[in-house]
Image 1: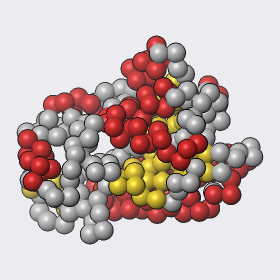
Image 2: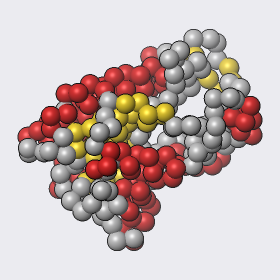
Image 3: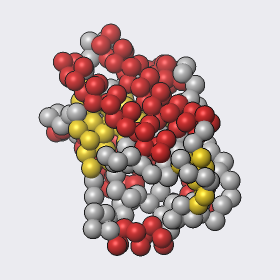
Length: 269
């Protein structure tokens, strides 16, 4: 059975890409959705396609407006997840306007491409900067700290109200040998995966499942010809996915049918 009326989701990074698609997919299944986002003004660079820059600078109100126009319930809030007070604020707003939160999708990322080498451009022409306190903080404050605090806030409120059904879903990337040229991104996502797996075990008795989704290359505006060639030439990469395709998997994990799927990193190809 799919999520139905009475379920409320918080989806982070819901102004574009996978986050916006997840918000729409959950709303189509009857969930009320709080769409949280932070607009990012990326510098102009040949390796960053204009579509990608435009997507990251976009607000989330249009996503919520489309959900409401289709008869759903949605709220858009711009919030900086690097502020430790933000998780509580988001849950307060969701409970006030939409209802108790029982689905959490940690989609947002403080993405930065950094490296242990000198600054350079990667194979796709994107700028890569040396690891620094700034790159570490940008990445870990969103992908690790915020994700962990959002899970903690979810758990605290769920247990306090005697909740018996819940879903926590995060997104990850990288691999067993890290994420060269995006080293802080890979490390922060590994930490988020650890938080999520721990939540799956600790919250199982409260009816909560928790999983991470590892999407394939997903065209959120950054895919260029070099990326397409990489995927075409790789024996391990099969598809370039659309955000909607990834969102369908996440929506399934947020359904009753996925009750036995927990404590997994689910790799999509």
